[in-house]
Length: 430
Ligand code: KE4
Image (cartoon, rainbow, N blue to C red; front, side, top):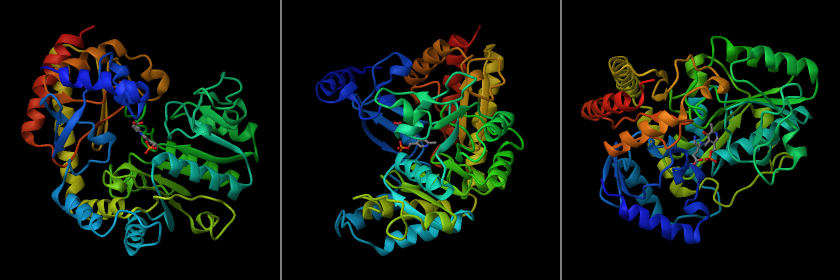
């Protein structure tokens, strides 16, 4: 498999773009090799500029749940484009998207469209702080909520739990307002509410973690966070940028029967174009300008092309049996990988929730970031490369997910399982 054109493109890109990419994970640094440059994609397949074809399990990190270049989505975007690409003014299509979101999520009574998941989270945290009149925010180690300063806080020393900057350029004072505890650890959150009683504005969590690999919430975990926020007058923010419209039409909140105060949406809700959203209880959302004192704005918020892609995507996902199909194909892939690992004698843990799946090279279980870090990243890197060379495009990081889409066929799954068996046999054995 030649990748010479990608190599040449990467060299050229590095002359003009930091690290040659516009988002760090695309540089393939997590798998010790140069990135592929993509030419085009259709359905469940993607082609690089060397003409290599892959079965795609990244799906642009989640948005492409319908598969790439779905004809009805492309047609909607083209129809919108010929009428103008941006007005910086209100349009009826935005009302249509807002209605679709509020119909999908019972907890969302008002919604504001933004252009990225980062913006959605930044706005949600600002709203929560204004509503609660408090500063501290609790997040879980290993969860990712975009790159706003106060979300780039890593776990501090155990005692303090105060976040420490996880990036240069983030003032210590910002990170210290973020308390970081392990995922799936209810007692740790209870302790924070006791120690910082009356100071915690919000708890933000990925209801299904998918940025340290896929980790399901322990039984009752989300409900305990909901109860703690109720008991202490704090805002529960569910970051459903990945899980929204992914694990169910109403996201993880539908799946687990829980209601957020504020929800962050992204990826699928934009249909592959830059559209994300923050929504929730009316009395919190109405704090947003121009109604209330919490400022938030965006030149391209509710962009007509992104909203066209979004409305087309959500209408297709609202059709019956969509999530049943995703579950069947994803379950088939999981069962096949488990069988391949057992036959190949590879020591792996496979976590799956709906069409989100991760393979960890460790005996497991994998329930939090600490346990993720016990996995053999070196083996993952070799596994990734074997799969790429076999025409299977996985996320170039051990801390991401496989995204199964509606365009993945039985033949795709068979090809993936055959490549998976060979790759696990060559790399997964202790
Ligand atoms: P964006 O600003 O990248 O649209 O969304 C940030 C974000 C917020 N919340 C969750 C749960 C997320 O997963 C993300 C972004 N996800 C990563 C990959 N898991 C985006 C890929 C990248 O950074 O290039």
